[in-house]
Amino acid sequence: NSSRDVKIVEVGPRDGLQNIKTTIPTAAKIELIRRLADTGLVNIEATSFVSPKWVPQLADGALVMKQILEHPGHEHQSRQLNYPVLAPNHKGLQNAHAAGAKEIVVFASITEAFSMANQNCTVDQALQQCEAVTKEALRLGIRVRGSTWVVNNIVIQSVVSCIFSDPFSGPTPPEAVLPVVRRLLDMGCYEVGLGDTLGVGTPKMVQDLFEMLLAEIPANKLAGHFHDTYGQGIANIVRAYDMGIRKFDSSVAGLGGCPYAPGARGNVATEDVIYTLENSGISTGVDLAKLCSIGQWISNEIGISYGSRAGMAIASK
Ligand code: HMG
Ligand code: MG
Image (tube, rainbow, N blue to C red; front, side, top):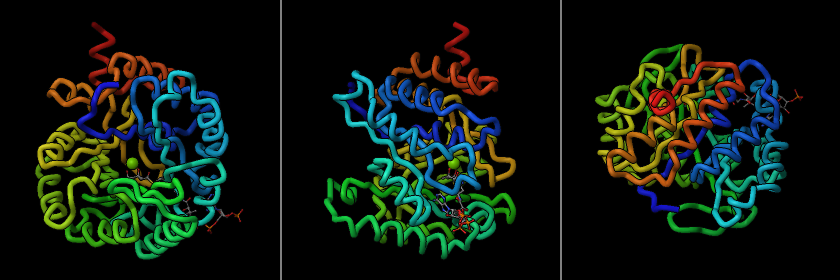
């Protein structure tokens, strides 16, 4: 494994699949995660432990976790692979823990309208849930590894949504973001992913928001989670990188979107991100050619056209 200058969290199996309407066989999800792990990616958001009524596609999360943890594949056994999963509430944490998850992601929206649509509660109620989940994990006993909180081997991650805009209520006031981020860090989350759910942000908007956040929060506590609706994902990552951010979420083939965020498209494609970083002298440890063939394979499986620009260019060479 080569050295890594950045942390890429592959969110395809979670964010990527949650919005696909046709039911994807559990075996294909497991195969996707295995193949992704084969490329050198070490952080793969595997599934969600949310209500199956709200996100039916990921109702098989426990099965997926069981398979990938019990049969990691020979080539992966020497590497530490992280499979974070979403857990919004007590039931989610319980189910994730029972399925063997070592890392959970709590989440909340910055904006009220999306919070209600996505989690059926206010932002404050969502944060209270996040805190209850975090505390519950803490009760299991705590170890601290480096600057990250490791709670009985459960690492607590978090993501906020709608940093720039809400699908129902419009632009997000920038000053609304910091208090939510701070609350998540204060309750013990080791980092906060900043979600541009609608993919409307531009580098200028990234610059203004991250400047505000970085005045109070160290760069290593923040991650960029950019959707690519307006084709701004790569530009936003580059701008955030230049500001010191070293953690980014992305999705193979540019899959993704939230069923409760109408108009939102996929996450920025991991292939495009790896292409940009590796060709800028920034090491990712990821095999781009392998990743591109996975992007094509999973797009075929789902029956959609392949969405990564770098991937298409590499395939047509
Ligand atoms: P609710 O209906 O208000 O929940 O939903 P409830 O507490 O009233 O429970 C209703 C039923 O759901 C009950 O079952 C619960 O047991 C069950 P019943 O008694 O009716 O049979 N339930 C659960 N089952 C399994 N696992 C659970 C769970 N919780 C309750 N964890 C709730 C509230 C939060 C549960 C619901 O709104 C929900 O699941 N929302 C999640 C939606 C979601 O996953 N959205 C996508 C992820 S967020 C995202 O994509 C954005 C992100 O990518 C960043 C970005 O781009 O911005 C992260
Ligand atoms: Mg997302």
